[in-house]
Length: 120
Image 1 (cartoon, rainbow, N blue to C red):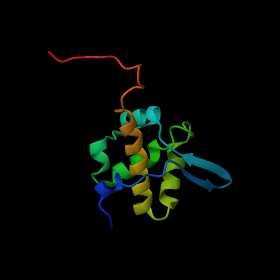
Image 2: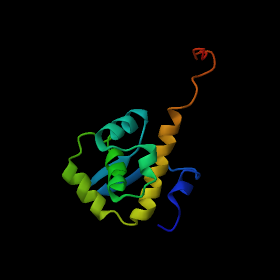
Image 3: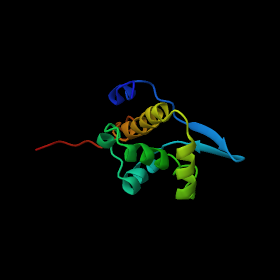
Image 4: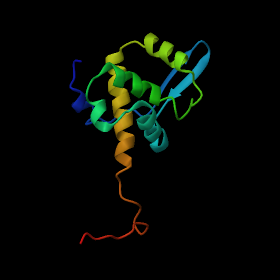
C-alpha cells in the first residue's frame, strides 16, 4: 500500500460507497449497529483493521453491506469484491468509514443526558 493505513484514520473519511452492478444499486455504509454486527460476524476490530490482512479487507467490505443490504448473499458480495477496481483505495475508504463510526461509540452523551460517576 502506498500510504500507511494508520494515516487513513486521520483523513476525513467518506461515509458512503455507491455503485451499480447488473442493474442493482448498492450503497455501502456503516452505522453503530452495523459496525457492531460486523465485529461479531467477521471478527473486525479497530486493532485488526490496521493489520492490512486480506481477510480483514474483505470483512470490512462485507460488513459495509449490513446496513442497507442485510440479505445480500455471500456469493454476491464475493463476486462484487472480486470485480472492484483499486482495492487499495477501497480499503482505505472502508477503514475510514468503519473507524469514524466506531469513534462515535465513545462520544459523550448530550449535555444534560449523561449520568455522573466516580471511581473509588
